[in-house]
Length: 61
Image 1: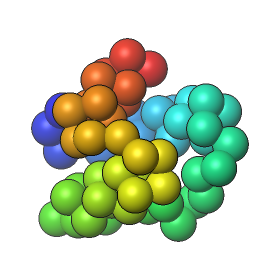
Image 2: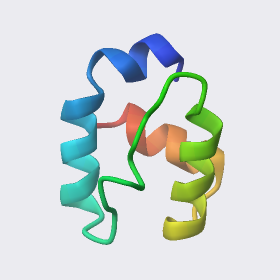
Image 3: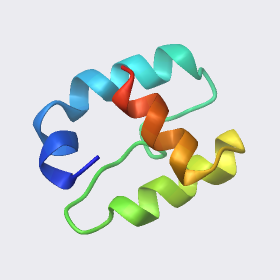
Image 4: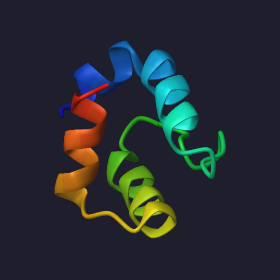
């Protein structure tokens, strides 16, 4: 998952993630330029997943 892939269709992916994991908020999924690792860290803590698992989940949306 690179920044261009995420940035291009993030709103769509964000909606799907919120449907799949109702616990997530807009703040958890805020994607800012240069802050991808910070966002992934928030998701890791909230969902209890590894970065690899998160990459697979996002790629599978």
